Length: 390
Image 1 (tube, one colour):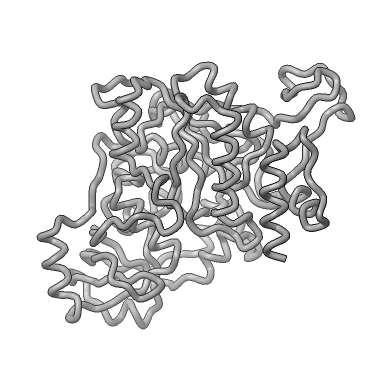
Image 2 (cartoon, rainbow, N blue to C red):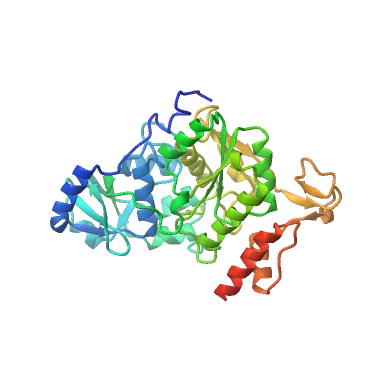
């Protein structure tokens, strides 16, 4: 792991900043009415924000064809740098035909607000089946990531972007800590090693166990729940955040944990997304990244530990972030504590582990998950939210 006076370098060497200066913003606003417009969906808006704040460094815009192709086929940018998920702006034929390469494009939010600008360097057609098989390992439309891909337009717009202004998050402003700020916070706390934790689910005892195992060997934990677009049946972000707050206040040493939101959208790309999530956390300043069971998976599309094996496809030090690989954790009734098969002598029937799906079913029936699975305060919060939404 390379050391650096300001923490580890961002992916590609330096942290990208594509937030317009006040002067640039004024210039863009004056051109607004004359520019061709593209309305972004929720994912594209998240991607614009992540590019602008440096979360997707070294990307400074939506990918051109050469980078897109090498990422899809080889998990690398054209210059050889590891990158596992294409970041593109697909549009309809009609929209693509209305914009010339070399022109400036106004980017609007799903609500129609002028939020950014694209300097259109290239338009290119892409092969959806090729992307699906390579990135998602399936072309089945029932896979949520594949469905988004197949529903998207057939032409990608590419080029550098600018975000007009970084607004506070409407739901979680105090947890909006962008990469430049998280790196500063790690330095202020003198954290030389920081482990990032990705989640789109409410925190449960297995999560807590592996986070605390990781905390035994690093200086700090960066608890980084994803709050961008997720599947309709995932627990809503505001409910998840309340659960994290409860855990943070009651069950973690507060001087060794920083909680922040990750504005990204989920792709559900399993192993490929594990690499992507690790590189994003590297940009936030993390030196280590937790990879657990079926990271970023959905259904039964990926093997239980495929997201761990994929890290072995890169040379040592090439990603410059250390994956911390954990087995599936459970409550062991014999040892009366959390464990994995690496540490527990128990038989399968002595192990309590519930899936997120089973927990949602229990909550819908008005049952609280057992304390071996979820801290009681978290279980109550989930039950309250489930009741309010039913």
